[in-house]
Length: 457
Ligand SMILES: Cc1cc2nc3c(=O)[nH]c(=O)nc-3n(C[C@H](O)[C@H](O)[C@H](O)COP(=O)(O)OP(=O)(O)OC[C@H]3O[C@@H](n4cnc5c(N)ncnc54)[C@H](O)[C@@H]3O)c2cc1C
Image (cartoon, rainbow, N blue to C red; front, top):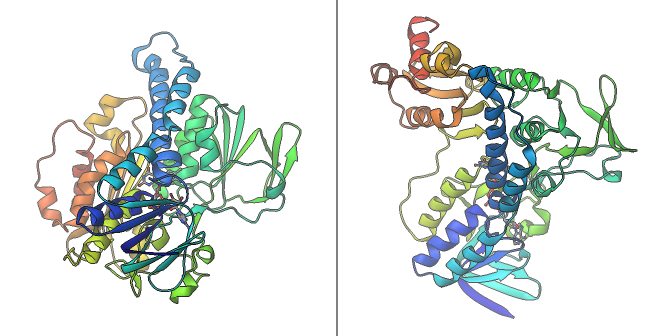
């Protein structure tokens, strides 16, 4: 049975859902195909539930800081009611129903099933074939990358799915991977009461970001009794009487009740049938042009493009691809001011190039750095005031090409820096701007002073 539509969207995660709604809103006949839940990774196992867990964990940490601020009796709030409430809300799937209804109200046709490309403009779902008049959009996201560790297939392990869905707090948790997902969940579980160890093969946590950011997060984690082992790889995993045992490259084996594998994400292009449209099924991502076109009558958006594993990238690309499908004139995709936030406490916000990446690109950068603790707001904040702003200038153009803001609200401070990098605001304009007193974002002015005058604020 062959069915035709204007547009077929394969994968209704954050990117696919938005694009499907936009083109349906514009009057096109759209078929949206989703194997699991509409909304994808973000609302059920990614951004939303993990940030709800972070919110609860941070509230507990903040409550425990009261004695340090006020010199009062120790506060030891019980994690369980907070975590139980968060868990109940975080694992709800109501959004799937709402999203399907909204799509169908716009005239979209929803199909629950696993789709596969079958030549240009054609998608198969079971025994049904769909033919697209304008094109197909691939928006199937990524899955957790499971490393080929000897013994891993013989033990029970968590990915972000099980870590979000668990109703039990493990006594101890070993986390493989010190990237954003690993460090966020490590701190959450530690603050809820688990004994947490992180194993990261690189020399520092958050390897793609500024090394100072990973070092500060490691320092804070150390003060919270999280055991951070960087520069160490896992060699093998085995079942132990009370959980798992991880053999490391260096040092004694690590034992924990639970193991969380957070070693990145991967695309699976073979099952999507990309070879039938002339694409390399062994590639790590689907290459796209600046309008997200991947082949004849084929667009790709979101994690599958390999251009940034973030909801905001999937949404940004969905808007551009939708405009392209509709014959509009959206500007071409531009990633020079790509923002990233790791929601640890302190938060790590970053945009554009790191110092190292910029130097690798041959830019003779100038760097400004300011410690948040010495700012007025940092001094007022006292407990848990660690952080910094690091800004990277291309001196030839006199603009910022990258920045990192670490601190209690590092992700929010990043907004100003993202605008500066995105709009290529001249450094002199930023230096002569008025920064509200006493805010955390005012620390950016200190970094600008350091950049120009070499004065450490
Ligand atoms: C723990 C965690 C925390 C995160 N936190 C953040 C955060 O704070 N901020 C942020 O910006 N990003 C965050 N992310 C990343 C974010 O979730 C992803 O970047 C985003 O979901 C990507 O959207 P997407 O549309 O490309 O793919 P997805 O959201 O993964 O959606 C793809 C959809 O396609 C479906 N699908 C796959 N194959 C098929 C098929 N053959 N047929 C039909 N359907 C198919 C899947 O079921 C899925 O629903 C986090 C990720 C994780 C894992």
